[in-house]
Length: 156
Image 1: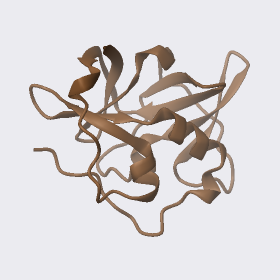
Image 2: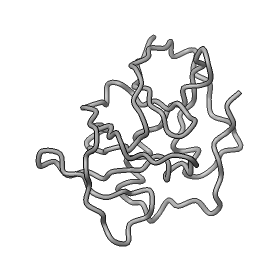
Image 3: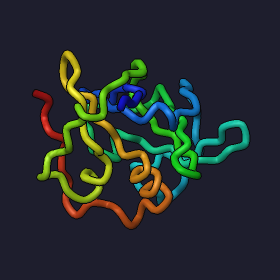
Image 4: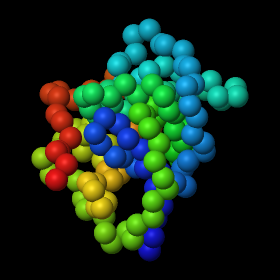
């Protein structure tokens, strides 16, 4: 079986989300800051009257050297809409599901929840995000902050 994913970049990482959840990609959308929200929540995005949390993926995954200010990926995850703030947008890539590599076992907490696995690219990895976990955590951000900061594994 094959699945398609929207690839995008945050810092040095190439990440992906299921293409079937994609509503649209926008550039330079502004969002309203919510006082007291954690740093992973950039604010609330109003897209043609539809309100949704804007999640800064670099802050969510603690990825350095990323600003996540240019692009918003609008997703419909289960019954919730969510905007992911990312550095740049790539292509729609299709993979055989048998080629999925599960995340390393040393990841824990929010990081283990956020990563479904990875597919090998010609250069590096496409790290798949678990959009359901990210959406759930964006709806209740105060209950999921990790006890200690971790980092994503280095690219091979």
